[in-house]
Image (cartoon, rainbow, N blue to C red; front, top):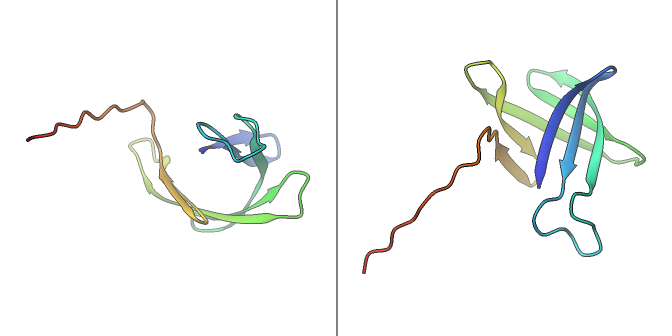
Length: 93
């Protein structure tokens, strides 16, 4: 799952984009989006488009540009990745 937060004329927008293995019956690249409602501190509600569902999300941590580095979505926690990072593992026998 990939998460995007973007500015829009009406405020902040939240998007979830399916990458890798999509849910059964869902196309890769599909997802949900909605307007973010500020609750205070680093907490928001997301009103999903075309759905009565509302999600809560929160942010913590910041980088040198004071952008949030971590996003907490119910059941999922993730962090900002600006560049793809490849980690090599070594096995010793």
